[in-house]
Image (cartoon, rainbow, N blue to C red):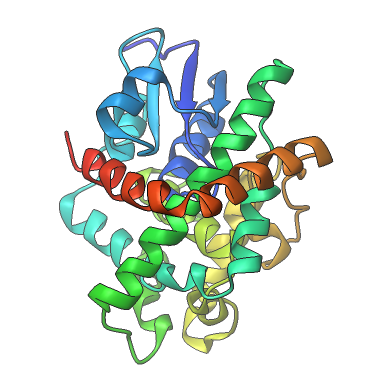
Length: 279
C-alpha cells in the first residue's frame, strides 16, 4: 500500500469548489497541510492565479483537483460522474450579481500563515484575485451568456437519485469518496457567496435525500475549518473565522489598487486567464 504523504502545500482560496475538494480530502485523510493564498512564483509564471495547485511532500507543484485528491488517497472519479459534478456548478456566475457581497466575502477569507509579512502580502494579492474572478464571471455572464435552467434544482436530481440508491450515509458508501468530496466542494462554493442554486438546495421538495446527505457530511466534517454550508443547512455549524481588520484593510487596498489601475489590471486579467488554460 502506498504511504500517504505527511506534508502537503495547497495554494488557493476557500471560495473555490476545487480548492475545497482538496482541503476536504486532506481533512478526511488526516493529512497535515499548509494552505497559502499567495501563488507560488513558479506556478504564477506558468498558470497565473489558477487554483488549486498543490505540492505533495516537496514534489513539483501540480494542478487539477481530481488528480490531486486521487494522489491523496481518494478513489478516481469517472468522466460521467465528473460531468454530473460540473453540471451542479450551474449558476456560479450569479456570484457577481451583488459586487458588495462578493468582495466582502473575499475580504473575510483569512490567511493563516504564521508570517505577518506573508499574511499582509497575501491579503493584498487576494484583492487582485477577487478582481480577477469578478471580471471573468461578468465576462462569462454578459458576453458568453450561458443558458439558465428553468429550475436550478434539476441539476441536483442525479445526485438525489444516486444518494437514495446508495442506501448508505454517503454517495460512495459508508465513508465519503471522490464524488462526495467534489460535490460537497460545489455546495461550499454555492454557500460561501449565496446564489440561486443554494435556494433550490434549501427548498426544493425533490431534494430531501440530498439534504440528508449534506447533514451527514456536516457531521463528518464538523471540525473542518473552511465550511460555509453550516450556516444554511442542518446541523448548523459556525462559518470560518473571518480575517482580522489588518488583513481586510490590506485586501481592500489590493482591490482598490486593481480598480484604480483598471487600464493595466484589466488586460492582466485576460493574460493570466490565458495562462490558466495551459497544462
